[in-house]
Image 1: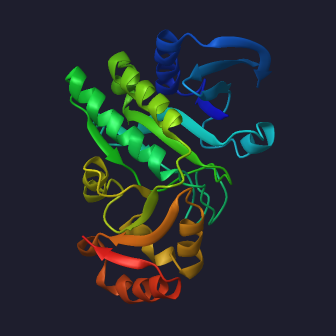
Image 2: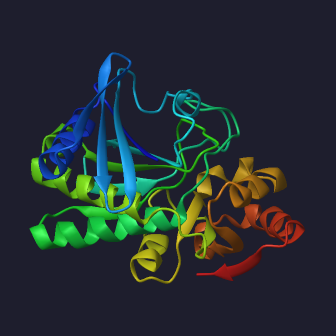
Image 3: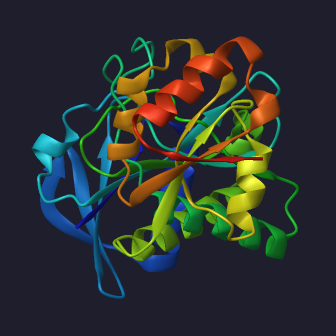
Length: 274
């Protein structure tokens, strides 16, 4: 079962959910979660349960206990940034250091790399078809929750103007459903991305061109907190097999390179510099 999640506290999430309901006409069940009705959606062979949270989507650390049959947890939510730039983004939740915004310290969720790449490509394709001026991008792994279940966010940003954009919300809704229906192919390989900014355009372009499916992505600013244990966790907490780390080489500080290279060698990850 795929668990689709949005929050009443999230204007973009509510609007994205509404577009999904308008397109797919889900069935309202007799069950509720946090006092809100649970819906079911059948798309191809995939069964999707759609739930509504009364808390911010970064905090529901309990979801796997409440929904033990969930194979993938997919959040549809807002993205916020000071720039207010129109953005459609995809990322895994989790924390490389302290849990400043939900989740657990030094715990990342399981990254569904193929489903994330599917969402990224769908966002780019559908927004282009609609003629929308939005940037499509991966984000690096950040914020909660930290779940031992494949988990991903598909987001609409970056300000209230975009959160109310129903056309953009529809793009996110369609991309989320495509990601849900693509989930489960274990024959695919994934890579670990390291270096560069929080929005890594090199990694995004590679994924859009079909060169690599990225699971966890570690930005330049997080590298001082990264050790062998965290690199091993990022590899092991990816749904697909990871045997390669792709390094945004110019996007890594020179003082961080020796420790990083030694740690990657210790866990036998192949290295590709871009």
